[in-house]
Amino acid sequence: MYHQTTPLHLSAKRARFNIDTCEPQALAMRSGKIKLTALTKGHYPGVPMPHDVIPGLNSIGFWDGVGRQDWGLNPHRNEGIEIHYLETGKMAFMTDRQQFDLHPGDFTVTKPWQLHKLGDPNIGPGRIHWLIIDVGAKAPEDRWRWPDWVTLTEDDLAELGQQLRHNQKAAWKAWPAMVRLFQQIARNIVDWNKPHSVSRMIANLNQLLVSLLEVLVEQQSVENPDRSFSRQAVEQFLKELETNHAKCLEIQTLDEMARRCGLGITAFAKYTRELVNVGPMKYLKQCRLNHAAQQLREQPDASITDICFSNGFNSSQYFATCFRQHFRMSPREFLYQGPANQPF
Image 1 (tube, one colour):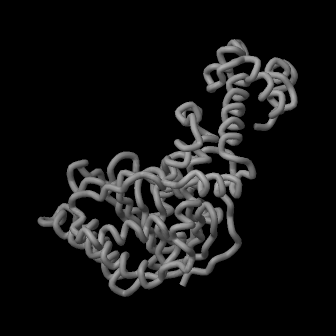
Image 2 (cartoon, one colour):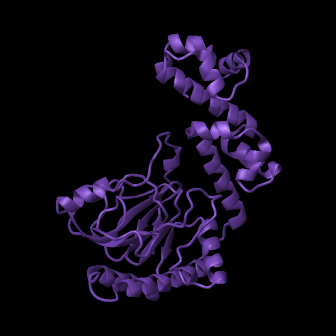
Image 3 (cartoon, helix red, strand yellow):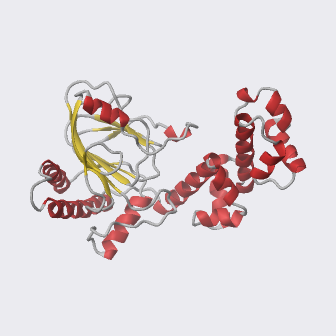
């Protein structure tokens, strides 16, 4: 069984992490440190699959690492739900909130918006399986759209979606049926050019999803799923305001902010204060000021008035007042008296 170790707050880093580039993995494969067998679409490593073959299955495969490894995956997110299953060896696995030591028979599930990585800092030797299924969601509030080849009943699919969206556990113990299915899928990948391989893969993937649902229900977290999901939705939304200039300009009212997270105003304001220690509208203004400061730093020849209006302020005088309150200097002083050292 997995063993949880020290929490790791990867999300506290201010750097933005994009979709997984797989560069460390590809480099390890080219240098012979791992033997990778996979089917892929897009930039993931492996044998290319046409996009109309099992659409939404972006990557599926396994790798074998023998001996001491000197590389690990960078913190990243994926374009879909990702499942890792560790068949042999030992592996450090980190999400944006927790760190685990995975042992044979453990598997992980990460949602598209979850920051995660393998290795601390390096991966361990062993065989690890993975698959990534795109469900059309990039944020907690997005609606999930399962690919048409998923044949679970409507009720089971709704239950699986609820379990995956709401559950905060990241690591689980695979049942024997899941273990056999991962091994069968690995054989499917090796024999991909043989007749009926697509049908076998679809059948095995659907059985795997049924087994996944059974494990999640049996080993479900004791944490209140509704509360944890709501908090996560607000946390993701606030992070987007911090990092996305366009998002800050889209949002105009408290009601709109709460609605984006699927919450009432009172609940949304409560979670916001818990997460960032200020009210929602004040936080929105702080984010706009930070974006304005970034523009001043990166575009020193731009008009301060233009920057004011481009960040949602309707008055240059009000903008200057808010800027001084936030940064303890005027926009012009910020521009000429050392913005390079000014934290946001």
